[in-house]
Length: 266
View 1 (tube, rainbow, N blue to C red):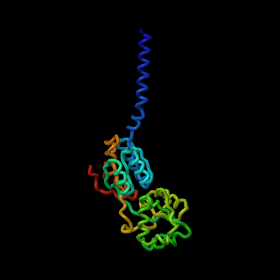
View 2: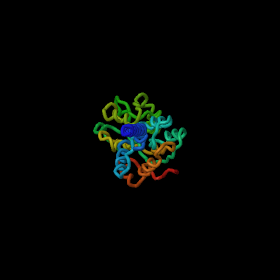
View 3: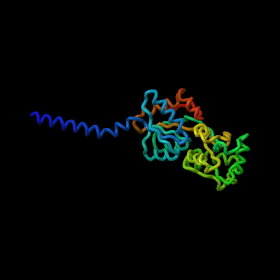
View 4: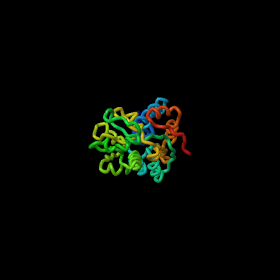
């Protein structure tokens, strides 16, 4: 009797351990939401996530890449609760593939950037931009690939606005995301780059020579989308609310972004 009872108890314990081991991946998945975000948001969003966690919430898992790369992955079925895109076009692309709630979160400005101390300052944006061919010397202008990177598309629009594309033919250095382009500038592999004003705030080796006038390119808007076909909707919505809150504003502004006020419709 005792032997049979002990054997049954051991068997029950083994079955319990097996059940827990099988459930563990699901339990681990519940530990934190996943947020896909444009590469230009890295430092600011990491700060926001730390502040959110300091309030007693589970820290979200952050994944950074080009907006186009992330939107395509999500459209193909990758799981994340939130997506922060560097433009509305890629959010719309995702919305065609999956149900989501989205609205503008942040604004930004386009800037001409250089490694600190390597270029004379610009007295005014327009003359500085028109002098780009001379400022580049024998080098090339780094920017995100205009074919799929939002910052590159804004940059190409500005170059077109000022009639510079013919003079810069063959002198553009496109990258898979804006941070790669600016890394080339930081390492001296390109004398100048087109990126965001926020990049100059958080990348210590770079400086903004000029902020590109707003009329030279489409408005820079970062929408925030919440995927509606994944678990943990409550946690996703809580972090979304935090990112739009007054207490998050100072962090966004310190990083060079403008917090937009329009909230999602659902």
